[in-house]
Image 1 (spheres, rainbow, N blue to C red):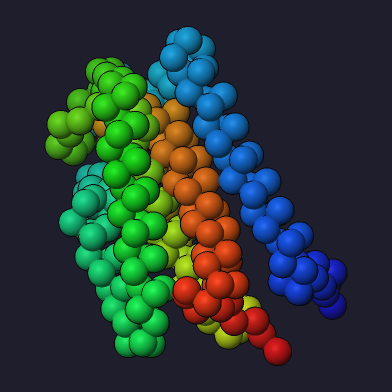
Image 2: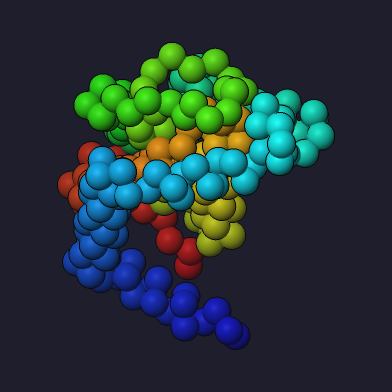
Length: 241
């Protein structure tokens, strides 16, 4: 089967805890490095033209107040962007915490709440530190009242959905279940970020920074989860037989 080498690699990583930890650590470091490089480029103004071109590409030529597509698509963009809002994120996190509660896994539930809450707090701190102005080229399609970099909705979506995804996937028994949960988490994260640019409330690099920060946080949380599981503080990862 064509996916057998990939499955063999994943099985080897699960069996060899040390190699798995190193791989996760490398991914977290890579995300932090990419975020640092992007932040440096943004602060130097090197991404200004790219941000401008991508933002304007989503507008009707000659009418910057009108996003591409029919009116229902703009309304759908607002629906998608709400998936990264504080209320929705809090609700989804509590529902996921309930999943571990009914499994009688108090340690995993508390870790999930701490990991998600910590990432959201980090997002708020980042906005205060960089204080980048919002795009002023086009009218905003959604209410905004905070700084632009990194995109709070994009980062909160990445932090919440990816962190929830990896923590839930690790206790599911089948590969298909794990793949489904992770795919949904990634799609939700991407949809929220794209909607922020489409509505004109964020520069594309704001969204990219939010994705990188959130992905790095999710990988770090998975790394810590594996270490806590080895000490018996949270549920061990379930592998398909």
